[in-house]
Length: 151
Image (cartoon, rainbow, N blue to C red):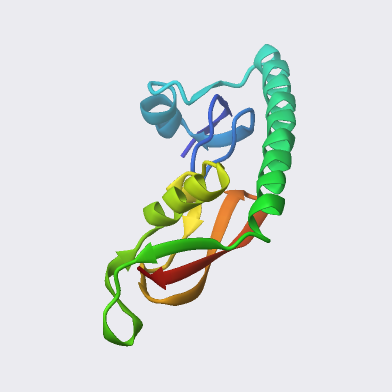
């Protein structure tokens, strides 16, 4: 089985990030990566282009990490309160989902977070204090305190 070196033009899950030079099988490069413009063949000139892609990626990554850390410093000390209808014993009529948490964060702090970045194993179904983990960056993960109260 023969392989070929390619330069990734965008992040590919399980393979690498933009600008990485990776070795893949010829068929994978020819039939999947190149038709979707995810990679280009590695040549001497394109290796220099890949280096500039990596530099740009590292600069953008540093800015993203810095922005995520700033959001973390604003959200960690601030508990987010969500009012819901509840029945006997503190059980909710329905549940509090990641989308509800995102809406409450937006309304109470003005910070926009993508709901896909919240780690909520299962929806919250009881009144009380709950921790929801926000993973805004690969290196920045922090807890958000969510206070669920009966309305």
